[in-house]
Image (cartoon, rainbow, N blue to C red; front, top):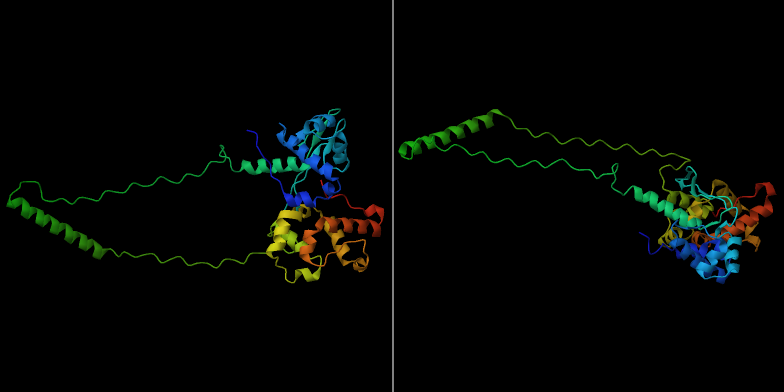
Length: 315
């Protein structure tokens, strides 16, 4: 069943540096092309020539080529490159996965964000399907309540006075036997188990293995400036901007990118150079992260040799 809609993140749309470089007309054309990619049988991928995609989306070929030049729409009409995605979790890279396969001399165009989100959605959906290896656990069958024993009333020999006296004697005998058994057996309730103190959780210093990827990300941001770590706790506005905006871009950064960003914040001459943007507060850093990263990249290229240039973090 084809889905009638796809998720749209306004903060990612506004903060994506590559999309911000495009003209207003090209950004509008990209929305029409995204709708065509969403309707494709191979989700997020169209194996048509670029001219056919522009015609199907109702945009000009000039705007479509502008999106290709700015690396927003990925692919090629003759020699497309496969899309290889490296998942990242807990500050560690996983095994690379090829999400888009290509054929030589055949066109292939795709949106890396749509393809990646679809792969993540399918991966998470596998753990919620009730297949042969993922069946809900069934509890043991409930035990049927035992019927109360019916004591024998009388010996069944007749309905006269003899039967009544016999029934009375039988009941007295049963009661005396029950009392003697209760006195002979000592019913003791077992003492409650002694609660053992839980061992203190070990902490892996240096690797932050017990922290979530969001906690690790906030710790890295706090380490950029000493004042941001006091207090280290983030308020609601800062966390809202992180989760709904630039946090996804920060999670894709490598250790070399964080090293470059740390050096940029600790450079003594940055506040006096107006060509570079350096926020003073943590909330301003999260809000304007694309501009900060762009300034840090220009600063790194200006103050380091060409061999130390960093790769583009946007995929």
